[in-house]
Length: 205
Image (cartoon, rainbow, N blue to C red; front, side, top):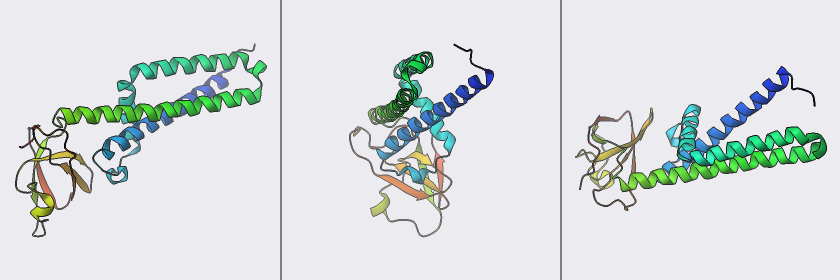
């Protein structure tokens, strides 16, 4: 069996990096989609850049580390076996095995991303949404929404900052001692409000 050339090694490394990046992106995108869907926020409204999905993908790997390690070991062993017995198997069989391996890998990415997102959401619910600080919101101008729509968010510092983009703020109003309540999410235009982020991570009654 001929030794692989430098070009072969570089080619395989490039494919591996490309597939690894695509896998991280898929796992991270699924994580973000499922997590923010629990708050009924469409992912497109958050304007996530590409690298954020990769970061979330890394988070998925960290949270599902044993599944990730086991998958890597299995896939390395499979690719080694293919390289060793490719001639005996034939081109069609090798192609089918490679395609099925990639399909399984991305199915695992979807499963791991969803599992990690649901677990993190459950943790936030049980911990009184400990990751999100309280904010004081002041509406600039005279066209502030009515209390019937906003509740006490514009009159108190009970809102919690869930996420922020260049154009929007996403707030929740959690209730102390009522972790199982399905919360509404308030979307405010960033150019209409001023917020003060408090060093307080507890909910109002």
